[in-house]
Length: 254
Image (cartoon, rainbow, N blue to C red):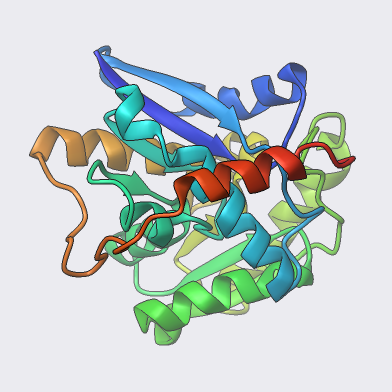
């Protein structure tokens, strides 16, 4: 049985964690894969500043540092920011997959121009970073936001009647006005809208979280992982320091 660790980028209750786990129902995976969802010990309120991103990287790195020693075969990061991916790749040899890069590259496999549909404009910097790193800005038709503050805990639960039509409207504008032939959900927190949008729209709609799980399945099946040339290991790891930092940080109110 292959063991997969999914790192959730916010501390949360078991009830809210269960809504994250629902992403597994959106994709058909091999029977020999078992997923463990682990929230970080501390996190920013949201990902809107560079300071937020530094804390996110540290928290996710700390949550996954022991994954290989614990017996996990791969790690997925449950955020489109891909926070902690590079840091964990420089610490572990098992596959580390974030949905940001994976979903944008998948969009290029399915079409020529893709649009990202997201909750609010304060997340645009997350996509700009990945687009610039991949050098695929020319393939981006647009980023469209519905200007609704995201809920990193309850996600879209109870907001379906309000949010789903707004997301559909934004996606249709991206297709009709911006020339998008693929739609990409801008956050794993939006996964509950995928079935609705996929049935309403005439173009592929990418659900980034489940895609990351499928990517891990493929990497494990192919016996592939990241390059140690691209992600060299630290000469002097500070694992104990990171664990101590996050233990202290977890005592603060989130």
